Image 1 (spheres, one colour):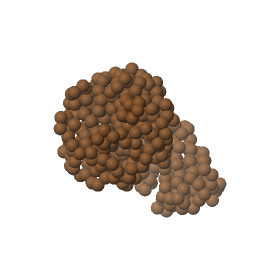
Image 2 (cartoon, one colour):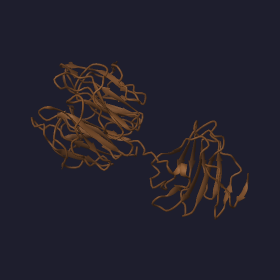
Image 3 (cartoon, one colour):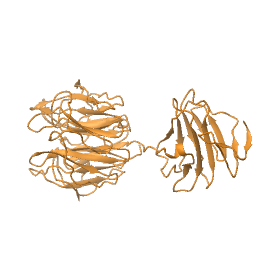
Image 4 (cartoon, helix red, strand yellow):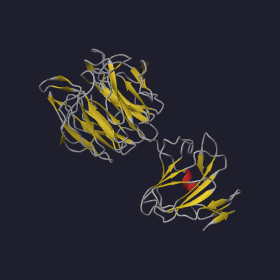
Amino acid sequence: MSGIVINNIASSSGIIAVAAAGLSWSDTIITGSTATVEAGKGYWVNTTSNTCTITLPSSAEAGDQIVLIDYARTWGTNKIIIDSNGLNYQGNPDTYTVEYNTDGQSVNIVYSDATKGWIPLEDDVTALEPVAPETQQGIMAFGDGDGIDKSNLVNSSGVIASDISLVGTQRYGLAGTTYGGDKGMFLYGRVGSDMTNSITNFVSNSGVIATDSSAAGSARAYVQATTFGTTGQAIVAFGNDGSYQNYYNLISNSGVIASDTSGSGHTRSAPAAVPYGTDKALYAYGYNGTYLNSKALVSNQGVVASNSTGAGTGRVYTGGAGFQGRERGIIFGGDNNNTMLGQTNLISNTGVLGSDVSATGTARYGTYQCSYGGDKAVFAYGYTNQSPAGNKNMKNLVNSSGVMASDATGVGDTRANGNGAGFSYSA
């Protein structure tokens, strides 16, 4: 079909809608992996052979309209990706991912203004929410040892930068997490013998650590935090304030820490925490007089379930990080009765904690860890009692398949028992 269609716009329901200004339909079917479209036109998109990225115009005026239709009913197999080319899409910047992956779907969008940008008209499309991009960079900070007054940035390729002088109270056994998708925070921790410190240090989306601010909730040390949900929430849970605890605190996507929520299952100190399934989380291992190998799942609403059977060797002071865009997690290291452990345990996208896998890295506990590059992770620093014993500054990269690389030379002062957090949508 070609020419100008004055009153016919196909909607996803097959109903013919009215267009006041008319719409010109392209007589060329899009089959490639990329295509650039124009306002005032309709396009047939055939993804039988491949996914297709559709680039929208770089400038638009109110009322500009574009229609995209699944020509061969194959978007469910090979999706289309919308690149809004610098303009907003449903009020979100073009760093967000916009995908359509339903067979037979059509996309009918109209440009509104600079605030909301392109807005879908059809009911089945309006319900679609763009997905925030993955966090790209990381930061490691605090701890005990030579480098307790330093932080180090991690770029999107897993390169750890040189030491940066640290602001904030020097402490160890603290939690670190991403929140809001592109910012981070460090919270709670131990100062000397004091395990009751209500301190938060926020990390900007450019990796700058702020000075101390007060943290809500019960002060404690040997806690862990991780992200969950779909809008940048986080959770901090368990810990030790002189006795082992199992309560938790939710963290909003703007960094507000909620008051304590009573937990269930084991009390525990120094567990590992990882995201999984893109919107849920898991706590595993830890110590409460016994080296635990149980796990506690966190729902996408931030509810911590009672403990369930874990896998692998019970231990404490383990590190955990997400990979594959928070789809899966990995746990590394730990201590069992002064035995340094070098194994890893993978977490599936359904929260299954895998059995021990011998790692290629040096056995140690108290590592710093974070995700980087959107789909990978890194463990660095830590303590080992192997010869030569002491704090380390080595690192081990984890690829997007969850395979840990052997030791690589680290950067900066040796240290242990600090933490890491992700920040920034920019690589």
